[in-house]
Length: 238
Image 1 (cartoon, helix red, strand yellow):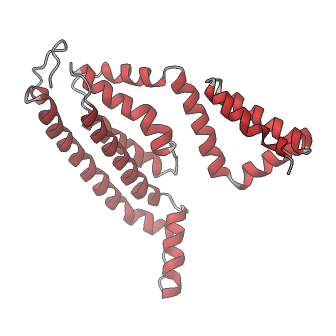
Image 2: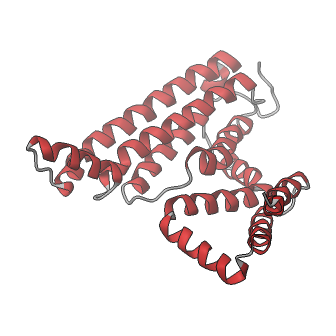
Image 3: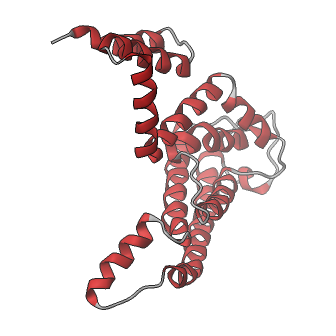
């Protein structure tokens, strides 16, 4: 076995340990692997192009992760927290609920944000934590863990029901192909129209539940002042 072809893996490990640019590391590792493996630059570009076309969803997901990682390293979390800090009366529950409403609208057009890893963790969670700090409280680990579960749950609900609003998604085609042998000819457009109230009710109910749950959590961890609007920014509760 020619162990030189594993040189790309070593480059990735060393690059991330040294905290170098993520995109540069991946491309450097890929090019070195191609050269050592004997396929050359032309073969590398051909393989890259064919792989991208045949695995578009995974390729886009990887690109999103690389971009988000680069942005996060350059202050994405801080910018998200500062943005929500400027909003008056914003609470973590409201932040998560508004994200769910936005998410289902984009899901209806089959637009993905990268899911929990690509969008919720680097953007929504810092905004939720920023809402806590903007109210004058110190984020407690137990509270933040609860918010992580709520944000992930909202992502799953909004995407699960929202994607069915787009005609031709994998879920819709699966339903159509499953019912057809049973004698039911399902029209994709009609199925999407029927799904609209289902998605609205599901996301709306989840959003309301998380707002109420967040209110109870704030009372639990910071006291009644956390929901009465009387907390001063200089006072730390809990």
